[in-house]
Length: 440
Ligand SMILES: Cc1cc2nc3c(=O)[nH]c(=O)nc-3n(C[C@H](O)[C@H](O)[C@H](O)COP(=O)(O)OP(=O)(O)OC[C@H]3O[C@@H](n4cnc5c(N)ncnc54)[C@H](O)[C@@H]3O)c2cc1C
Image (tube, rainbow, N blue to C red; front, top):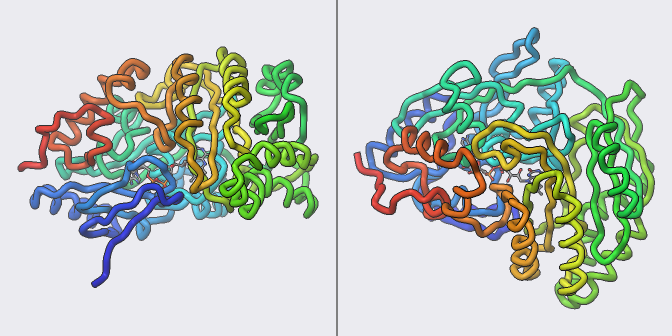
């Protein structure tokens, strides 16, 4: 008998939905939701499962929009594209480019669905460039009452501010309208620098570059810096050696060597030092969607926190001392990115200029003590977790750090009065009443 086994990218979330539905249109999607309502069944919508938390977990009905991809409409004058919610980012990049458009910013990979990426606040780096959620100017969703509702800055604004990042708790998003830019080329410059010099120049790097980020190698004084800026130069690839080095380093050094650290954990610090030593200088020029992202060849588990930009160095120094003191067996570099404030209710950048620090552990290695120690530091500095990445916070703690928490909860209750879209994890996360059942 066929089973509906589902697991996330790293394999730490597994579930077996009773049925997985693949609607091909908004109407079909609405029917799926209405049928669940009628039968009193809960429903979770998944993208590509690139989140580490059990956001998509369900043993009832799962909805995938894999068969609902593409562009519905382009407004060339406004440079806005309305796309079907299941569209994968790599397809979106290509399709927008055919219209002479590009996304304003992207994260590290392009495997995710647009709705999944938006619904967790997926972000890249750049002080003028918010997360993918901030690039949304309107969206349509099928709510927990089975209605199709549209929202934007000018229509149902409160709902819009909640729906720009909602973990699929308000409804299933069917369409998203994105504010794009005219297609542009980026020049990515990769370099190596001592950490003290990066902090001495941090404001300038953030101010003078469209996108700046850096990777710090634990147990070393060195970082890999990445600067991207718009260019009119002709496309140019980094040399094969430089490209391989970047691939290898960002992937925590070859799978084989990472696997070795599972057997000999003490090899981790040496591997981190080798990685730092191996960083080389390279330049790449191409259309933006071909520059932002890199394949992730090695699987890992990850935690990422957003902290106020003005506390970044303190947090970073504390993390560094903590790793040195506790001698954690980690070799993946810590990624550091930057973003402006926004006004999205559940955005970790709500109301403050932000820095993001993310830490990775090779799949299969214990990460719990390392993440717990770093989470303690992040929390001391008003850290807000990335919704897709591992963290331990639940309703009470989240209420303290998200100023619009109660507004989000109220809107969630209105959109989904019977908890159609809640699984156990989300119920605990938003502090929904245990008595709230799908009863119609
Ligand atoms: C290798 C790797 C690299 C990553 N790099 C970055 C990065 O650079 N920056 C960053 O911020 N994050 C990054 N992430 C995290 C990733 O972007 C998020 O986990 C994102 O949510 C994944 O999209 P998805 O399509 O896989 O969604 P899923 O993980 O499948 O779902 C995520 C959430 O979206 C909801 N959802 C999905 N579709 C819909 C819909 N149609 N309507 C309503 N809700 C919906 C789901 O219910 C769930 O709550 C990375 C993850 C991995 C594994």
